[in-house]
Amino acid sequence: MLVPTVALGCALLLAQAGGGEDAEAQPRDLLSHLGEKPASPPVIQPPASPLPMQDPNAGAVCLTLPPTKAVPSGRWRAQCDDATKRCLVAPMYELDADGMETERPLERVSLCTDETYVSDALQLKTYRLEPAVADAPPGWYRDERGRVMQFNFDLNRRLWLGGAWAPLWRDGEMEGRMRADFGISVEIPGEGRRLHRLRFLETELFLGEPSFETTVLRYDFSVERAEPLFRVTTFFGEPRRHDIHINLGLWVELLHVEELEREDTEAGFLTWGAVHATLDLWHSRDMVSYVRVRAGPSVERDYKNGFTTLVPGAALEGDLTLDRDGFHHLRLGVEAEKVLLAREVEGRPLRPERLSVKAGYEFILLAVNDQPLSLVVDGRGAWREDLKDVPARWEWSGSAGLRFSLWAPARRSAPMATAARE
Image 1 (cartoon, rainbow, N blue to C red):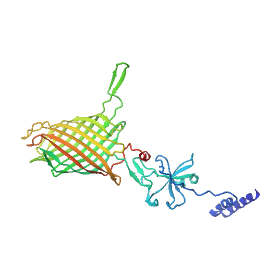
Image 2 (image 1 turned 180 degrees about the horizontal axis):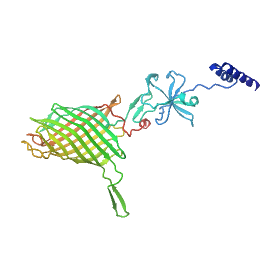
Image 3 (image 1 turned 90 degrees about the vertical axis):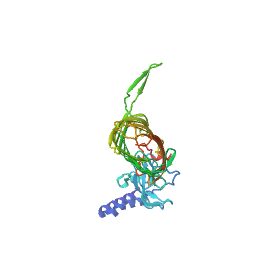
Image 4 (image 1 turned 135 degrees about the vertical axis):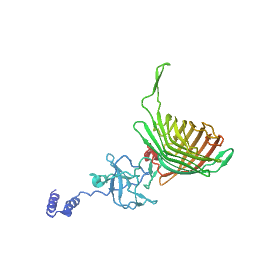
């Protein structure tokens, strides 16, 4: 016992006399020679199959470990559990096909705390270190190489460009047409149980038959009211109360333009504005999908004939996202309109009517740079008697094409990557 005590005393004296880093290291060196073993270097365990995934809701520490052949930088993200003394570690850079570290840092990963700001960073390196896949945000998945990819898409929040073959059938004959479409759609959750929807510059241009249709702005909202409008009590046996909710909303359209040509007749209609009341017959829990009726008036300018009309209308429509990840989308609609306060135009009724039906389905095929490319098919029918010298008749069209979405974030209900992997 005397020899170690004397040696330690000498070391402390030398430290006070010499100072500096070398002097501070001498006591540690002496202690190691006197029987205290230095900490063993951290060892990363063999990888499990499949690799576990880090928790996106848990904090991470940026650790520097001894370099390895696969990860020469020695830079890792670690999520540690003090109770089990276990750390899930993932490289901070993507790996190549051979499992070797690249120069590309991980994308869409939560920030990690630098080890210099963690008091027990040295202790963490003594835990059991197990390879893992870094975390990813909701709607995104990360593979074993650390590359991230989106697997969940919101087709109600995007900017899209599309094209389709859209032939038209009338009087038993088919006219070949191509269609180009464009639009921007946004959804904004409101206070309480309310969802606001906006669409900008929704446009369809038909080539091969000179016609187009565009809407500058369309707005509507769905709401789920907490208080029932009617409380019905039945007395067949035990009294039972039945709450009836009337979820009324609003639908507004500004500056809708439709121009078309049929035979030798050219027609053009500008809707200055339309205001409809809506009633949700059904909507999903998140109110993204719905089936509703709406009705109300619009003010329309027939700019080919030079007068303004009042056009009341009503519609039954549905917009349905059919799966959790937003790959399947279905839209349905039936609409009727009647033109009032119009001037007399030779070759058409004084108060003409319009009817339309449509059904469309969109399916995401793949994603390019995490932007979805989808297949779009639809069918439409229109009956109208507001075209001069054109007899009222049904026209039918079908289309099949592709649509590219330049912005389609993950749905607000998107699961974490761990749940998606399961």
